[in-house]
Amino acid sequence: MSEMIWKSRWTNEQIRAMLLEQMDAFWQRDTGILREKLADVANAADLPHAVIISGMRRVGKSTLLAQMAHRLGKDAFYYLNFEDERLIGFQAQDANDLYQVLVEVFGERKIFIVDEIQNVAGWERFVRRFMDLGHKFYITGSNASLLSRDLGTRLTGRYVPVELFPFSFREFLHFRQAVIPDLTHLTTPEKACLQNALNEYLHLGGIPDALKYPELSITRTLYDDVLYRDIATRYQVTGVQPLREVAYALVSNPAGMVNYNKLKEQYRLGSVNTIRAYVEYLENSWLLFTSRLYDYSLKRQQIAPKKIYCIDTGLVNSVGFNFSPNNGKLLENLVFLALRRRTREIYYYATPGGYEIDFYLPENRMLIQVAQNLSNPTTRDRELRALEDAAGAVNAQRMLILSDDNEDDLQLNGVPVQVRSTAAWLLEQ
Image (cartoon, rainbow, N blue to C red):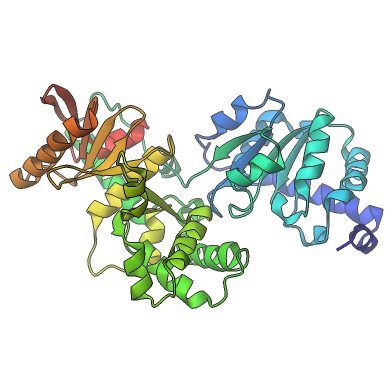
């Protein structure tokens, strides 16, 4: 649409009314519990860069913006929501006209808070120009349109990326108004309460609205929105059924190993490249993550099966299909998400003796195993043998077993091994 089409649809008074309505609705929205990522957003306040908050739909990006807005004060910023149907057809060249009305209504301000900016064609041009004039931007957008790799060219590196995930375990407890105990002196009842809370978190996940409105099928609707709006529409996928089937199989298999060639054969797709594309789309939309095999050969890394993790265990439970509960795999999924909040360099490892290590973090040469509990001697022996076999091969400096209780530290071939309660460990991340 051209500039004149958008401008011709509304009078100046109608635009003024829209801006006032948007500001009032934004300022009055429920800001919920304080998100842990608010500190990252606030720390970037004095930088001349745009702050880009990305993440899957309905993880609370707009709420995080509102929390930052209340720190700034209502008179400090302009607010724009480009999901408003009255802004359909708005393009970058309309920015000056809209800015003029903003100044008329609110006076001169230096900060813009913008929701769903991907709906504006060429948005990066007016953002760059206004940044050059000394304005600060806090921006959200749908995950499929504001990928970090796209932003490098759009804003020429002048942005601070902030990734927002569903509630962490600590945020989940805050949402539930649960008391977080002193982790250094846990009583037996506190351990039991904490384990019960972890089981609940494992089942329900951390999507804010899904927890707030359990009577609604929010995770199912969210899943469909990602497939149809963020993937099928954006990537112009013809014949959505194969995409649906592949996505369903992957979501139903958290922490599972995936072979692209086998998926191609199973779903009778013409090329393994189609499977690769589907998985890339699902990753780009934040629905799934993949973990690669750690190997000194990049070729072996590329051709080895991938492990799949879902953005939210509650979504797995409501969308995926399992013959029986698989809490061990869901627990591993939770640990992956906690690690992914801190780093992208997460691998699994196959030891020389044929054991699998759940996670290897090459940045600090750390091996991590996840087990529901270690009460079975066979399980304990298997986990320790796997770590011992891997330690020398990757020259590990630290090893960690996450289970249902804390135990005394030990050593394997001179390498320290911690055995920690998964619940307590999650609260420390």
